Length: 283
Length: 178
Image (cartoon, each protein chain N blue to C red):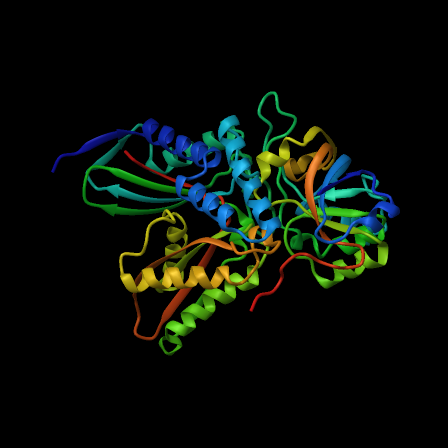
C-alpha cells in the first residue's frame, strides 16, 4: 500500500477557498431552481421576492461579498483516505485554520460563541468548525463543506418515531416541522431529511442531505418518489417566498437513510434557507 | 407601487401604512438583535436609563457582516424577529415606533404594537447584499463589545421593506398552513 503525503497547508488553503466561494457564489442548482420558480410563481409579491433574491445572488458574486450576513457555523463531512499522511501539522488544526482564514480574511461574519449557556463570548474567527470524519480506503481526502445559518437551523427537529408510525408518520412529522417553521427560515427552503440510524445519526444524515445538490435524487426510487411528494405538499402550504404568500415555499427535499434498530424509526428534519451554501473538494 | 417613507416615522405616516404595502425607507434607524435587546430589557426592568434614546425610533434586527474596503457596511439582511419577542413589548411601551426583521411575531408583540401605534416591517431574509446597497453610512452607538450585535445607527436611502404587520394588527405573513 502506497502512502501519500499531503501538506497541512494544502488542506488549509482548500478549506479557506471552499468557505469563501460558498459564501460569495450561489450554487448552480439553487440558482436554476430560483429562476424557474420566479417564472412560475403566481403571487406578485412572491415573484418580486424571488427576483430580489436572484439579484442579491448576482450582486454577491459580482462584488465577492457574502450572499447573506449570516455566514453560518462551519460543518464539514470528510472522507479521509487511509493512505494519506499529513505533513506539517495535524489534520484537524489544518481544517480549523482554513475556516479561521476564510472568515477573518474573507469578510465573513463571525457568529460562533464559546460557551452556549453561560459565557456566550464570540470566538472572533468563527471556529470551531464541526467535523464529521470517516476513514475510507484510498489516497484522497474528500471534503463536503457547508455553512449553516441559524435562522433555519433553529427551525429543525428530531423525532424518535417507532415502527408502527409507518410512512404516514414520517410524512406527518416532516410536514409538521415545515409548517411550524412557516415564514421564519427564509423560504423558499431546502429540506434535509435523515431517516434511520440512531438519534444523532438521523440528525447527521439530515445535515448531509442539505449538502446534496437539489437537482439530484435519492438512489432508491421509493425515497426519490417521497422527495417529490413532500416537495409538492410543502409547496401547497402557501407560505411562499419570504413567507409573504405564494407557490414556492421549498426548492427541494433531500432524503438520506441508514439501517436502524428493530424498535425504532428516527427522523430528523434539517431546514436550510434558500442559499443552501455548500461546496466540495477532493485533495 | 412602492411607497417612499422617511424616518423618523410620524403617527400620521404610520396610520397610512397597511399590511402588504411595499415601502422604500429613507432616514436613520437603530440596529439591535438578541444580545443588545437582552441588555436594553434588563435596564428597563431595573428602571435604569438606556444607552440610546429609542423614543420615536425604528429598530432593524440585524447583525451585519464586516464591510469590505470601500463599502459602508457588509451584507446586512434581517434576522428572525421572534427571538426579540420577549423584549419588544417593553421597548414599544418606551416609545419605539417600528421594527424591521423577518418572520413571525407573537401576540404580546402585536398587542403592544396596537396599544402604541407601531409598525413591523419585513425585509427579505437572505437578500443581504442587495439590502446593503441602501445603507449609506453606519455609526456605533452602544455595546461596541458585542461586535456585530452592537447597536448601530444606519443611514439608509430607499431601503426596501414590506409592511408585514400594521398598527391595527393586520398581518400579511402566512403563519399557518393546512
